[in-house]
Length: 272
Image (tube, rainbow, N blue to C red; front, side, top):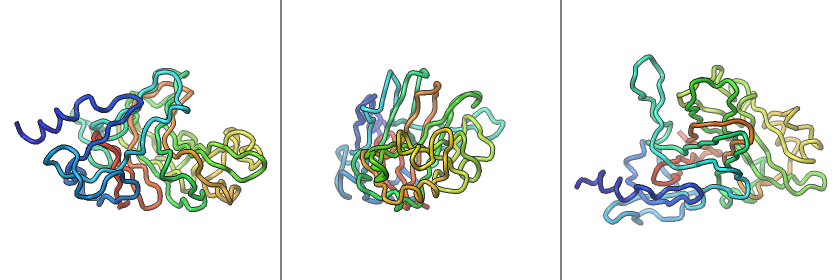
């Protein structure tokens, strides 16, 4: 039995809704970007499967249960591959490596939250200079479809509230924050930290600073209006409750670190 078949057999069925099993994989399988150890639960030289060296980051990534409702699905997977031309074959690979975080939200009553509740805690909002990610919408039309967003749970340090969610709105953001033309079944990048971005803060904080869902502001304005805000409980992806969605996300970039979602786990890379 060759190594690839052995690896596939060992990994089959290990990643399920609500619990992500992480195992090391050969570094060479994930492209030319260099992994870094920003949040690694292992060290270089340790191994996952016997005889297979690896550098694995991501033991702290997973479904955020307290922010998840109904029966949605978030799973580390291979692909998906997009179609960028008229050929039958899907050949556009995920932006990093070979995999992504697949997301399925079956109804408007469902909500999924997937992120990291450890490594960003205590970071100042003002220290986040770059915040980007890639989305694949596996639908025939984007009409009436809301894409997964970035959500930051934060202590705003404004007014009396000690909690708010800071939510990026990919659907109402404009270029260069969002693609000038949104296209289904291909990978497209969203830059939540640049001109054209639309954000809001939940609860009393949004009203106090003038960044509500009805009157969103840019990321630059959000940071200006929340100069002392810190990440509190989590930073990650969220989808729902609004409308069904089938697709995937990948390549979450926070400053100079890219979090690459692969079937074998979440790997960290230097931004390229």
